[in-house]
Image (cartoon, rainbow, N blue to C red; front, side, top):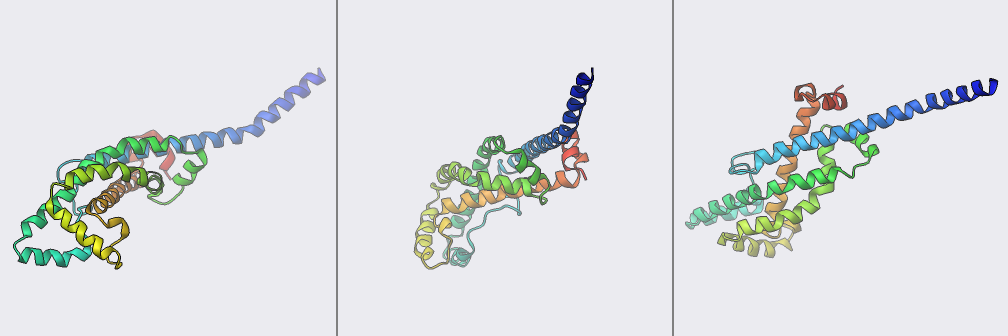
Length: 225
């Protein structure tokens, strides 16, 4: 009888000692689920806003201009009667970004599947765009490879793109243009990704500021104060 009572006491003590671990695992699991939902909402919102006509061109927050060092050159081109071609290039750049963005959603969602519970907890407790920053680090390079051919197809019809690439190639060695912007296609790809993560980050901020307003019990539990 005493042995049975002793075994029961040991079992209860063991179970009690494990309770904090179960609670912690549940908390981390909720964190990972909350990140997945936040990413899904952010990606959905960003793709919906950007992946349509004028998604970039009509949005001053993400509209892609010609690189700064070419702005003076565009003034000269306009004086030479080439203003229409400059405008066509800017439009083509933004249309290319709008065409590329829908390709991002699947890759973003796939990236979250491998997230560890420990990473999830750190991200939830991080800054107001820590979820977005994490996915930017995880997906920027593969998304860039996916975006580039789409951007290339959309811009190669504009003859001024060849002139941009020629000028950029000459001045890139002088430090006037970033190496990754040495072609119009690379420049637009980078700016398209910048715009994508900016819009996802804005959605994340909304979720963190008002998790109750999302209507999701999970986001309220994970991001609520």
